[in-house]
Length: 532
Image 1 (cartoon, rainbow, N blue to C red):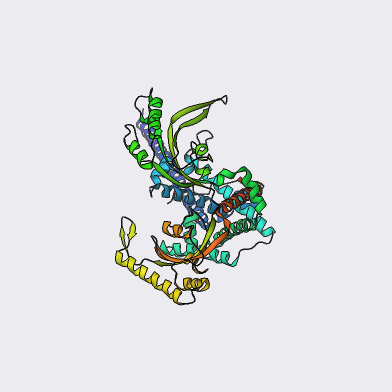
Image 2: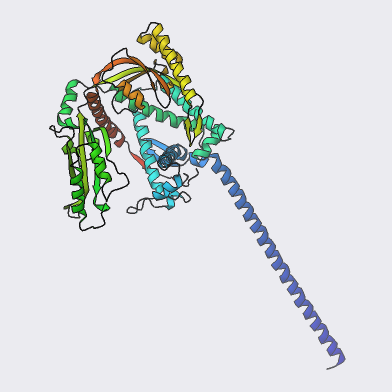
């Protein structure tokens, strides 16, 4: 090859190499441009997501979504998430409050015993293994029932022109003020923010007021109907005819001898009956308790249990028939088998002996004594120190309260000494806010009523006469007592009438509420986690 030919070839090769380099650079530029476009697109996507999340968060917190999402329907009412959340949250709070009280303030442990882990969402935990219902389902259904009850009664109230009384309206305003008070305590600068924190986004004073008003109206209508029910003596006697025993009360001592206390399971029934028979030979409560203490197979409680004035319906089913025998006499004692009954798939019953019930009869009453009406002036103890969570008052502090009570009683005696003057004195001096406005009047007191023991015993003393006065001590302070007189109604008739009223109210209420259609809709925006 000539020199000129080689030179020409080298130029062609260099030209080709340059072209390849340029081509490679062009490819790199295109590739870089592609990366740049992709990067910019990615940034744009991220920005869009961020903006969407921000906007969604703002929208969510505003409550717009909650207010425009129907969570449930009750009759003709569509309840949005905010409106339904009041019922849903209140059901949960009420349930947890009961659990907390039952467990001595150990809510989490009690919840675990009930099968609920408070650290996990309600809709992720099964409540009913057979149906697969979750705890969220349980709370939702309970809330729906409460909502149906409120709206059914409130609709009836509105249709009949029933309105809140002045006192009920005041109570409603106090309820809302209480929410404002809580908002301040927990550091919220507005009631709306506090309600949103408790009930969820969208909750505010306006919607809470509507919820509370509806609830108050329903309760008012229920109470008004209940108060409107009246019964004649013939009604009471007709019901009593078939339920006479239900309104008798019995006093007795009892002790249970369980088969499970015996190691020899084959002879447990025989040994338990022999011990029960031995106990039933006692001629006094003291003898009975000594015999119980001498048993080899006994539980920690080594004495009989005293039951005083227990209604027939609350007496152990093992002893009802024996105790209610009209020929029963004080000191009668016996032992009765304790059996449980179970049924198999075919409905056949099987009775299993679990032990023997030793019973000693003390007395019975038909509860025909009249109800008592009294007035009182409470002088509370002042001061006190806290010991083991309880307030303890010194002798000096108690003496000061007693002196004040005696002074008030003497002031009444030195005056007109009438029921009217006592009522006025109570209005001016009593520390019992619940009876202050009506002059310390407390009516329809009966044996077993939920009053402090000394107060109750003084009030229902069968020797008590109208105009009697006295001073009794309770855990709250000293009570200056005035006996107004016997009520026209006996305790027995009081119970019969209340039973009739309760039965009629249940029938009336059930008919109204069951007629109210109800269903859950979109509940996804409700809080399904514990936030206590």
